[in-house]
Image (cartoon, rainbow, N blue to C red; front, side, top):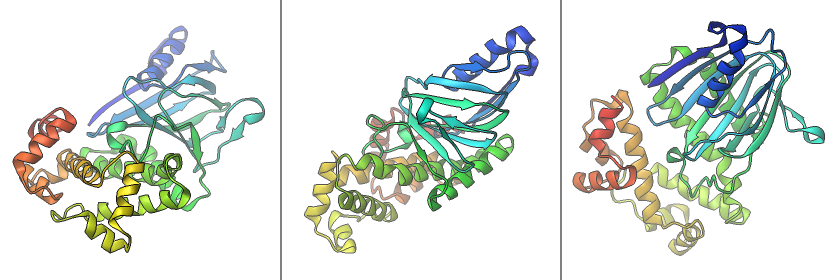
Length: 311
């Protein structure tokens, strides 16, 4: 796990604004306008998980962030108010965020966030590799808000608030279940929003239900479309139709989800005692050599090299 910190307290007063802009640029936040140049201070603590999720806790004086969150690699960003006042938007479209609300958006979208008081914020970047592109399409997503008054969002924000409070103390063993939970919450909370452009409401709900049923059975090497159809009391043809609308096939989805779970396990230090073969069989692959070739084709590296690089 990689980590770094930055504090304007180590810079002279004339240099603090430049140091702060450089720190925000490093975590791909847009440009900022400081509201108190003379007394400004800011701190950033950032970690990057083995699977590439970046968690940054930002504590700072008042300012306004406006522009694009740019990054060459596609990703989803999340911003969680911890303390202070947060105002999203401009003019008549301004909206005060409450504790428990979560802002989100794809990298590259324009947004304005006003922070009129001392504040603490958790800012997260989730790479596209952690988000199945057919379940969560960043290309058609707009910036939005997960309101904290919804039950699942309250649970998600509670997890993120705990991460913000304990960011300095997290170890490699701690971070793995957190990064998996974040990706699952994101797909669960946002998946139907992007799915709605491809399905009607019933179709989007059914597609999510089918995908969840597949997730629960990925470790079964004999998993088949007909078995899922029988379990859900629908026709195999209907399942195929929903996957076609998503631009996928049943077999490709299963294959990619198995690879993603293997990748997560290989990055998990708590599973070092399992061999690579153990992990591939654990997620339903029946041939270790085929798994190794598939992993390299999907992620550009071998399972062994990936594990060593995250050791």
